[in-house]
Figure 1 (cartoon, rainbow, N blue to C red):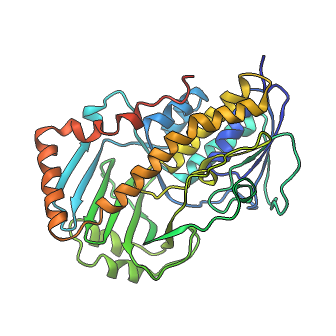
Figure 2 (tube, rainbow, N blue to C red):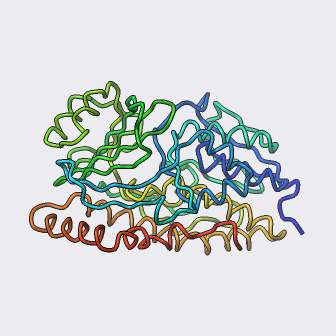
Figure 3 (cartoon, one colour):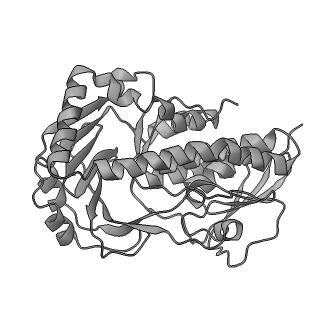
Length: 373
């Protein structure tokens, strides 16, 4: 017996997590209402890398072909040093030929999910700021790192500032830009770039800067400061940075994976449950996985408390492992001195002698199928 047919569900937040959940729940017959503070779903954020584990969910939702139309295939990931010299190459197209890795602007994914949720029957109320948590049969907190629901379930928490600050910008892409994600690694800093299609290139640059204490995407930065921070980088980086006109800046904070994701009537998904540093490209992917698993658990039977408990049991260990992997990459990208030289030499050797090994280290991540019970 379906646990979702005509079941009312209220979701706070119309980002990737909230809209994917709205789509998954409404397609199963739930009566879904999404409450979003913003008056319009604006072009917030920039590039996303979507790996096969999330693509399986988009396919199960009937959105794969539409998503491919707004995204680019990601052929490989290149790790380079600050001069632009190749350190290692993860050839996704060659070593995982059947797996779709895609690059997309967040705004295009959000627009697709909004349309799909509405088509499934979900109601999306924009300009609705939740100041008090509504008393409803089922409340889903998909409202990010500053979630209003998370403190209710977990009490007050203080995130840990990592001492790292990130810039995010969009620049014009070269007409012949290869669909490749490139990571340029230097002492105490790194820069990631990849094309997004529709003439756009994404830039994310991270530097160790212990004086920054603001979390969030919306703080405007100075392009000149970004250029100065990466002035010693080579390869295409100087040309890219010269094209930056507008840039956002934010501090990177480490949050614990929530101890309590649900209480039988309310549940957390996405960044509200497990904020992650952006060093595994899995923030949006985890949100998409969460949404499907939550809907599947609720649809399996009428016992909502049991369904939410099962959801947390299924998702918490996996998300914790992904967050820990992202924390490790935050250290590995910024190595200094002899440690950096040794690590880069080892990566070059593995990339040359056993290139498939680098990507297969993450088979546990990419082979996962959230749509399989």
